[in-house]
Every structure is written in structure tokens, then in C-alpha cells.
Length: 222
Ligand SMILES: *Cc1c(COP(=O)(O)O)cnc(C)c1O
Image (tube, rainbow, N blue to C red; front, side, top):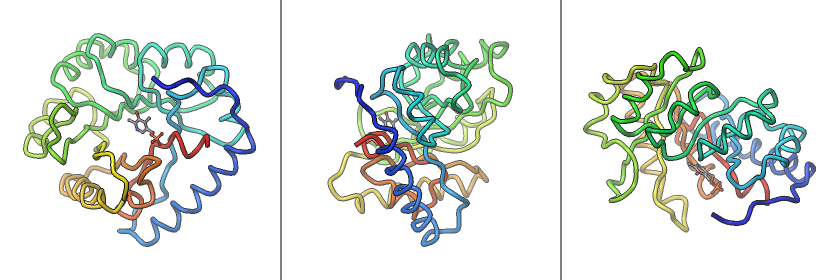
């Protein structure tokens, strides 16, 4: 874990957000006609004390990677944002997350589905999940294989809103275009509305390929 950022500037984030929003609007217009692209701020880099600055800068949706961090941050700043979970979902932590979040972006295991079922009484009304897909077949990386997607969706005890992917780390974002296009195709074929794809390295390409949510950290705070 890199050192937490503790000197965030509201003006800098506001400026970055405006620039990114402009880039996303232009990119979406070049793409397959998805609606506006939502910016989710990845907050694993930030201590809880920094979060009010994000709200002041205009951020409305945040995503956290660790269940206990999510709990702590929601306890301090819950009403400021919509909260999503974007990290690897450990089944024994599912119950900590489900009372608070709008979307879990990263459901990829049957044990997570079982925990969602088991704790259904705790689930925030309206909670939906995205299924993480491992498109590139990368070893050791979370994600359901495309061929197993339909059966996995059929086993989900909560509504599936869409798909998410974490493509390989690349220098040239163009190299991830095919993965984003493939995720869009999988979603379109199944009538799934949400596509969570694109990070600081490749959000423009992701928006061109139909992302509905981009998850951005580094470029928002830099
Ligand atoms: C940290 C993180 C991001 C944001 O990554 P940046 O490269 O900092 O924009 C997006 N998605 C997930 C799942 C993350 O953990």
C-alpha cells in the first residue's frame, strides 16, 4: 500500500474532475452511444479526513477497496457520497459492506454469492452488483471467465446491474480497447446496463467503448 495522500487540494481535484468530465463527454460522443459516463473516485489513496475535500470539489460517488476502510469512512462521512465497493471481495467481509453500498463492482466468486444470500437481511435496499470478468484470462487475477458468465449471473441472489473488468496494466491504453469492447458485447448480449471499466491509465478509451462508470484515483488527485 502506497503512502496515503494527506494534502489534497480542493481546487486541484475540482480542476481535474472538470477536465476528466470533458474528456469523457467527448469520448462517449465518439463511442457507441452510451449515456453520460459517471466518475467514481477511488479513495483507497486517501485518509478519511481528506474525503470532505472531494465532496467540496464535486465528487459524488466514491469507491473503496477494503471492507474495514469502507466501514470507517462511511461512519465518518456517509451522507456526503454514494458509496461503492470496488476491491477484492473476501467472503467473510461481505456482511460489513452490504449495509452501505449502492454497487459492488467486483463480485467474482461463488463464496461471495453465498455470503450475499446469507446476509440478505442486512443488504441496503436497492443494492445491485456488477460481475467482474477476467477477459484476458490472466492467471491469478479475479474475475469470472466469459464462458461461465450466464451460469454465474443465474446464481446471483441480488440483481446484476452490469459488468466490470480490470484489464492488464499497459503503457498504451489502445492495447486495452479490445477488452473494453469485449466487455460491452457481453453486457449488450445480456441486456445489462452498467459497464464499470477504465482507470487513470485508460478511461478515455473505455468511454469510447461504452463505459458507464470509470474508476479514477491517481489522475483525480495528481
Ligand atoms: C485503485 C483502483 C482504481 C483507480 O486506479 P487509478 O489508476 O489510480 O486511477 C480503479 N479500480 C480499482 C478496482 C482500483 O483498485
